[in-house]
Length: 420
Image (tube, rainbow, N blue to C red):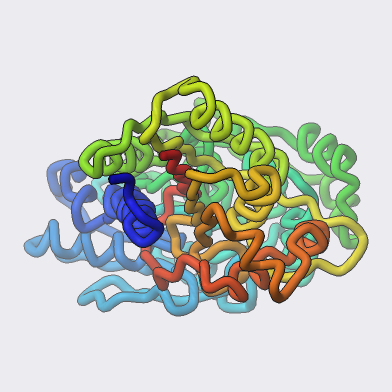
């Protein structure tokens, strides 16, 4: 007998949770630590997982006198014994983001060659640790961040811009810590796991250039505050490869999360097909994935049911000139997927951000079922909601939100489509 709706929803949630668990710093951080140094150990960090990473480090090195400061998102702090934990805003920085950056820079100044700086970096750090470059203000940074988030630019492009407007990102934190050794322990939330992109690479050399930043601004027609264009014309480049020493260890990545999700799918009796880390417009990906799901069900291509299509990566949502509704990139993907499937039987899906929050909403993502559109149409127009980027309202009405609370880690999105 094929599984019923409740069983498939439970399976989808279990697959999602397996991906999240693979990136828990308490399970993976200790294996990446070096022998303790002879000098001081200063811990700094920024990101949605920074506080939990700090607690995991304290647990792994109880005999080492640790000191330092990390910053995480409001509501994401955990108890630590020696490492200071600050909170700030995400995805748009606030005054506490700037204060945190100042405090972290203060922590790494005046160190010697025998000292070790451990930088705990994870997704979200760009907003949480924001110190404007000389000549710019926090208001300038906030305006640029808001413009980037609705531009359709990729995470690599957004972070290239952020680095060049910052006094701490793009390797400048490492510069401030010299001559101390800097070890970066990072949880990747970016396609390709480029460590220089995670949280805008505060401890790593920056391969992007000011010329690229100007091209990105022009390509996406990003409206800049008046002070930014003249700053870009006179700015000094970020540190480039070869100019600063680098020691970076990725303790969790999206690829690891996809493997964990696939293993859980096998345990549950579904044949997994991992499609990798995908990018592009959320609604476009929904259309593509609907076509693959229909092919699986009708033709057993590219895999035979019962199967699950698993993917990660960071899609984008480009907001037009009109007002936008509520929802994030994962819920927009799901609403597009449901509309494209148009009630195709035997197809369920979950999509969510592994940090527990999709966009600005208090939900990691949502589920869709074969009758999603039928249930949604009783209270709203799903197609109109997609055009208005109002996917959250649809899934709230149908009771299909994926609610996890803060997971305190972040390896980007996890999408799983079950076909039976």
